[in-house]
Length: 292
Ligand code: AMP
Image (cartoon, rainbow, N blue to C red; front, side):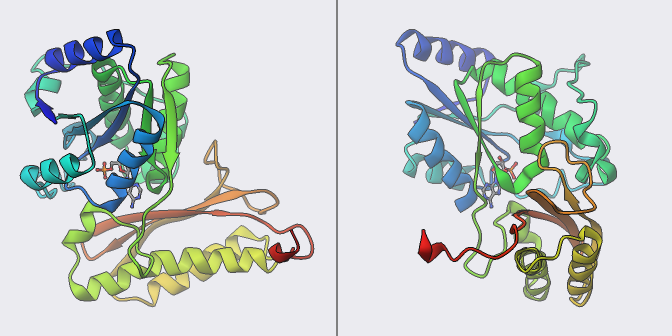
């Protein structure tokens, strides 16, 4: 496994791999790797011959009062985990390597950031789109794999890849959860044991919403109300948003008459957690899958 820290070397390496006729898969991460990240690497392995994982805590996607400095980092551990996964290259640039003093070019999407996390994190998606565009130009992958856990990010990057003609296949990979259902996240390491219990309310409220929809409930505000009640019954929770929305535009839906995404962001203590699930309305009577 090679570790590359400059954009120029990474570009040269990518060019050499492409000249050999090999396809390149990219998994962008901010490090502090967990099973969720590893599943993206496995997905990329299935789709491309050469696997590049980037490790970069991107300052431009953090707001001024957010956790950029506190964000967990463990480079040695990440390197060992990546090596075990058979990663070919770790691309780990420094902050000044990607953002020089004169840096002034950003990628801004017009609509997708106006929903969900973009409301309380107004500069977040500008930072995400910009760094991912830079990574795409540096690594020149054929395929890039992102987690559905960060659903809005996935939708945004799909849009950007089409709009800017990157010619890269964007793959969304399922959310990996702890055995009790909590979505894996580097930020889970901030939680105290008591907060860890409260954090489970995100998953519980989403599962409960799925059940309500399966039993015929189509009214989004009633489902949101039930989720809100459940989350608020747990200690140290503060809801940022709960939304049921169109899976592509992220525009709120009042009636769930077609597949919808339920997405939420909740602060547990000082830790902001997100999660989401697809809601699939049943048309009339539930079909017993054993009859298929
Ligand atoms: P991060 O390091 O948090 O920026 O995440 C890097 C990539 O891993 C993103 O595409 C995330 O959506 C994805 N990811 C994070 N947590 C999970 C998870 N629990 N399951 C699947 N993918 C995840």
